[in-house]
Image (tube, rainbow, N blue to C red; front, side, top):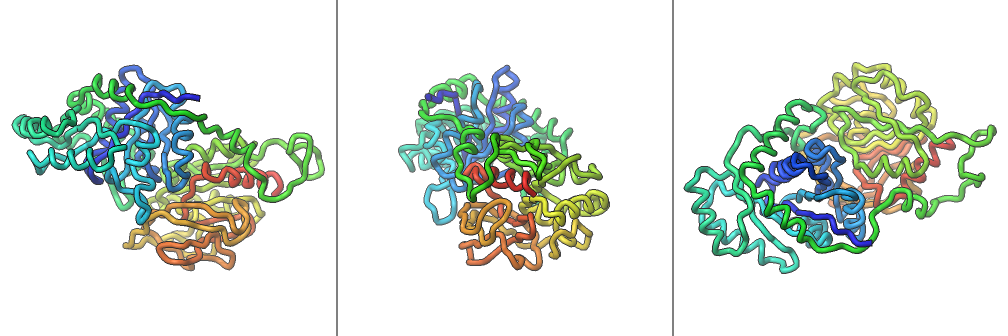
Length: 471
């Protein structure tokens, strides 16, 4: 199979240069031209893909070589970009920044090479003029395998400033494909973990994305950018397919066989288990592939909002509570006592529950003094310390997600702490930055701070669905 979707990688010398504004604006501007645009984000970020989805009308997807492995970058890209006219990939941090101590691993540069995609460098030009040429030359020449094919100048102060920047870059050999003036209209509010998610400010986010698109239309050469994208090299290989990877994943333990693999408690065949996935403004962090894997493994996936719904969906046999901001909504989550009780009853009945980060906080006894579900006898609170980074982990205890000894890579990103930090049966053993055990396995519950990408271990989804069938 040959993958020939036109594509661009939007990178920058450093964080704060305006990648998200430019990438999201480009997505929206091209979509307004009638193109079907596939949005992607390098790294583990959950928030930027929400803005990408708003700009394109398609699910924002992540490309993370640390979490998923380099071999899955092109297949996951092809899966998301199938049938599209253009793919725009927003980078992470600076172009060459990746996992700490791992060289280029998980960097935007590595993903660009794996996708054979041209890179457009977004440069914050607010405090420089001729020096911009030296900066761009350095980034363009650092790795000959990375094709820095154009520059978009951001935060330009005036026409004279633009003229000086363009004159300097004429000598670099890298064309200027856009020039954006300073604009407060496209600023997006941020707080302790980055931008405020789309789900929390839908109307304002729509306006912000519209402003980004208009700024990009005015300041960028869209025709030249699309021509550049069409010149991306062809990729060979098959697109990632949830059904195929689930079918080929090895069962981690023998299971009873029936004609179609579905077994009921003494009454013959059983319908697909219903797995409820937390959503709404408080739980916005999830990878699209997780629901796709659960569905491919035979589950019916339904979404519920812990801020609004007082009961779990009828027939819920398993629960997935991903990341988000329960600390922002602690009073409202606590006030929804009927749902807290329903979650606790399901968990204490032994149903499989997978909780990551925000989900761990929601299952705790209390969060910043507000009563939560009380499934785990832990207290959670906000902290001034940011915990951030990739993690190599190994499952310590058998759980609904994995057997002990299963290795996974994950990511932590939070400003909260739970006390104690691990239960009698911990979820994970983590090697760095210090050796420790973390999380909780209790009956069917697997709760942890670690965010994982199940595409790297599709057997996790298969095992979870099987446990939902038999619990």
